[in-house]
Image (cartoon, rainbow, N blue to C red; front, side, top):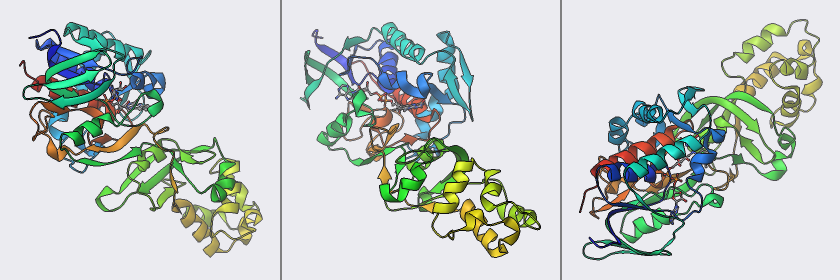
Length: 406
Ligand code: FDA
């Protein structure tokens, strides 16, 4: 084997790429990892508010969106959250569960980067970083990469370049371009786990609520792609954010409404009718017992269909039908976003390389022997809460175990 030739070239030293490279290297394969950024694994570093929500112990295939929903089953079953926790503990990293099965580092996400780096070192992985790939082709035996650090030849190629979220950290559509170059199909990519935005004129009044947060039920999407979450909502200057909105954004399609239940788990109609007799409080102060005062006032004065002047109406004077309608509107506030905050603010990309062209046990392209694709570049998108890293580990592991010495 010549000095510049490897069994495997992995492009992208993020979560999935380092996992695949380390596993293949530890099996004795000659692996080179090519990364164009100057700083390693920036997305891991900033993830989970700097503590990396590295997995979710409740992970199942149902926590992922894909045009091919069964594709992720095999890899997720072969490498579980428990397997990654064992690796985390082997490296002495302390962790805790925060919310609904989400596991975070006690200290810093840096420790997960260090873990992956050490695992790569154990596999004697060669690094080319920072290094950009100008051209890529397959001759009769090898993938040939023309890079800023010279030519690299490898019998197998792993695309681990992630998705397009946060381009300011080096995210690109490189994996999609290369996949297309080799004849693979791509499911239209879109920003996901992303804030939703509204018409600036229409949103002016609610923009004043920027910073207000509350727990809501949120519903969105259509048909089989319909979903419902109970999470926190955050008002922003341009629209809505917070976990509830990030979750539903992955299911939302342009032009569709989302529906918010602003008083989840309560029967507001009954509560308002019971509270009415002899009650001299104004409607807005009754709602202020339920919500932050600013929200109660803005909502009553600005939601379509709520009559002008009801804010100061005394409860005892409010007709039952008004209270009923108000309760209905609070439990089912329907609003149509005009867009998303885009890849600059998205946590992930939805869509990606169509998994129907890949083997689900190995991540190898069926029509292009030797070409593997892992992680977020694939059309497998996890919910918010550690699922996307679990997919990166599991798909990286499946690929790392399948690569061969050539
Ligand atoms: P990843 O993006 O990690 O790595 C891809 C690598 O390829 C990068 O290093 C990139 O520089 C490199 N690359 C791209 N193009 C290239 C090219 N042309 N040549 C060479 N290299 C190239 N998930 C989760 O489960 N828990 C969490 O807490 C969070 N938190 C979070 C916060 C924020 C702000 C974001 C943006 C995202 C998250 N995520 C998350 C999502 C998670 O970070 C993401 O799904 C995984 O990092 C995907 O792993 P990959 O290895 O596929 O891509």
